[in-house]
Image (cartoon, rainbow, N blue to C red):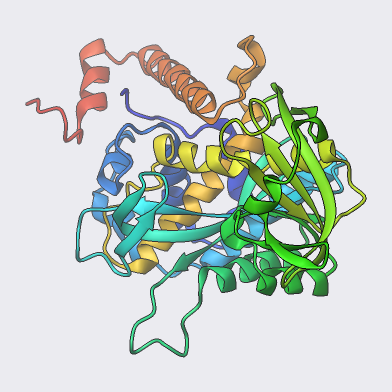
Length: 413
């Protein structure tokens, strides 16, 4: 990749907001690290550092990430302020809060807090870090909010141990404390439990969760598992419902709904759905406290859970979520914090680029936006080289300026 001669415009514009958190040198590393997460093929500290023209030794950026005195919570606070301002600008007054977990896969066994965990995507055991995260989803955009690192219980930490359910409750409360406007929480069957349900009732939040088939409901004064209740239904009791997914595509499913009493939960509405037709394949169960909602609304709202999956994919494939090569947890957490910020900026700020205004394209994916930022940086490099030529520098001299200190190119001048 060509050396970077200036930061992307949307990052330059947002730097003053974060300047109270950093000193001058830290602010430069902050802007460069964010840029590198977005455009660098190699998203390690060294890989990012080497991208910039006239860069200093990578140890300076390593120190910024792992040891420098700056407050990660203030960075998160400012990021969420950007989100709230974006909502206010676009008159967004409500959204959905999605809770889920993901793994960050590593190979080095001396990384702080890394351990073996069950990876649902394989499925199988994997080594690394496991995080529980929250995602804010609105009709116009979606962004990550907070994360919590899940750490297995050890003999020394029994009193301080927090389960994934405890961490999920912390994430819900953090969103409330941050002033994020949401009325409903969405999650898969792992987070459907009486502990979370009771907490959501205490803060007056609605919810929709997927359910395991062994949950029991009261039918004719008998407790019956959902998977057994389905067998009592007839095909004629299901109807087709078409929902709109987050990408605009539509999906038609066969559904059945019933308001029942569920063990340890209370009176709820259960939705049973099949993708093809009733009794073909496995049924999918949803449960919500909003008994008056239509089947279509319940399914459409639950479909808004998908953006958290696309965030995990984009954060790992495009923004280097798993690319950290530091061992200490402080540096790892800061890396995650900056990945969250890079993703948020790409979602709500990247349109500030002058390139996006004259390039007639409707780029909506994170991968597409990363490529657009790369194009902007190439354009900036061309302007820099042209300016050098206007200042009477010979092409060979300009070339020398480009390759000097580039560890990937070895030249003698």
